[in-house]
Length: 334
Ligand SMILES: Cc1cc2nc3c(=O)[nH]c(=O)nc-3n(C[C@H](O)[C@H](O)[C@H](O)COP(=O)(O)O)c2cc1C
Image (cartoon, rainbow, N blue to C red; front, top):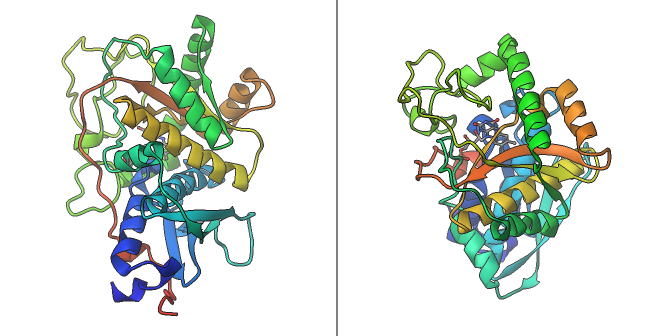
């Protein structure tokens, strides 16, 4: 990868390592909608609009959340190399089209927390399996909330019985609306099932258990057309920790910011031995999202809904090779 030499003054293997970390971020349907331009003084993060999901994510909001997650990984990977990342999140429709640029802001000695988060990057996974019945106690909740706060976002814990019931209602309603939308179904199908050699999408081994009629929450079904694989009567946990990653304002910048916060929460969860999955339906369906927003009080903007608990390990999903993520020109010798 000689062409990578020079970005931020790093060696090519270091640049590759940093971009590999970025690419391990979660993304909707594992679409990996990010690209990187390497320049001598900066790494630019761009959205890959050829990977957008117009029916599921019509405003590219989740695409930007996913890119924000990749940006967080990129930041901590640089810190792991002793580089202080100077990040600028750019306004929508800036001339370069980039969502963010990362420059070298001097050197630093990474602290233990950063190193633990970095170590969690390759082991973090979306875990769609049933979780254990044991709840998530307040020590863990506090650490997760702090993770979001450190990234200038808010993690709202869905607390009271009434609120949990209301959230279930939002998830089910939005899920029904999406199931009736052929566009949403086609996008799910395109990223699901046995796709030999695929470097994106959600393979069957990561799909979790197939939904059953008795389930209280409605999970996205990554098994179209397959038989049930769950023992009859084997249910999901009765009381998952459900949390909503929120930004304080609307718009593209806030979404990239919230994506960084989401990833910090997910990596913090990983360091604590917790598993997490997503229930994005109520933030993807605009009308339900408005209801959810009102229910949270008008100051918070819900960006993604997480289900968190303890579970058994799951396999990793595939990723595109780093070389495919590079934009031309990758000028980096200077
Ligand atoms: C913004 C966002 C929304 C997501 N929504 C869902 C969802 O509603 N249901 C789900 O099962 N997974 C959801 N995912 C998880 C992705 O499918 C997952 O990140 C991807 O398949 C890569 O797998 P990994 O997280 O195990 O690396 C979402 C991920 C992101 C970033």
